[in-house]
Image (cartoon, rainbow, N blue to C red):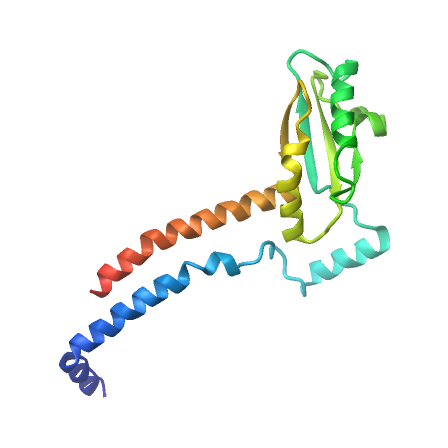
Length: 190
């Protein structure tokens, strides 16, 4: 069987080579669109026992997740400075309510755990209005420019921001992998 297959491939080698080249070209063109069809999220399997347990807890206790953490810092002011407090509180107050369902900070909770030990930094915990991973990543993109507090530096973290960064990096890596692997495969096939 393999002998007859080998003879047929040898006899029709130019046709086989042309078909292989056409397959590589068409596969490469079709494969460049793969990132457009990927959905964000998927870090947990929705039918797993841990996902079921998470849903039971959320139903019983409510969603208790902080989606975004924003760290505000000043080298010159402390969190006790009224200008520092006003900058953070005004920024949080002006966030769109359709994107952020709740927030917690040093001043709303009066918890000193929100302040750094040197008192030059504090963080704000934001809960987003959606629990869908894809929508949360879109919200992070929308909120990013609105999180700037005058006179302070900010750093954004939390699960939603990390998911967005991972998704962006995976997209870049897929593009790079395709750009490298397709020419290599083409050379190997020719």
